[in-house]
Image (cartoon, rainbow, N blue to C red; front, side, top):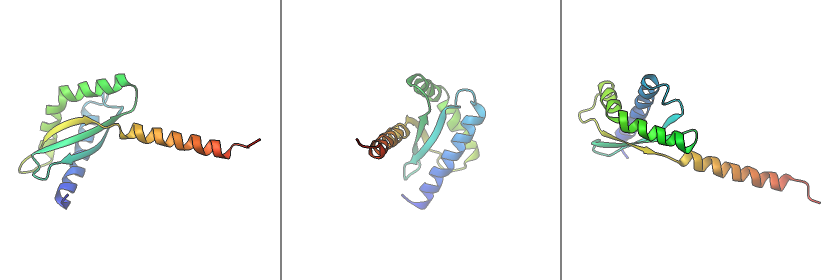
Length: 118
């Protein structure tokens, strides 16, 4: 990945997150934009988001991006000036859940090892 693509990814992540939390504060309180992965030609970009909460909250976030994804793209394109603004694809990212699960398992193993043996 080039430095330019990396910088564009960071900028898009920041601007999408700011717009989302400013404009849709009630619906997006549990949503975190975790990563943006733009194609090298900057024609498309996958926006990965994670959600704190239940499966219902994840479904609501998916519905929100389905409804307002084009609005987010249009408004961020007004702030981020590029020759070709990428078409944004919103995808759920479960890596935070997997990370939390691994940490819980490691904590359980640590507690098991530190427990007094009889």
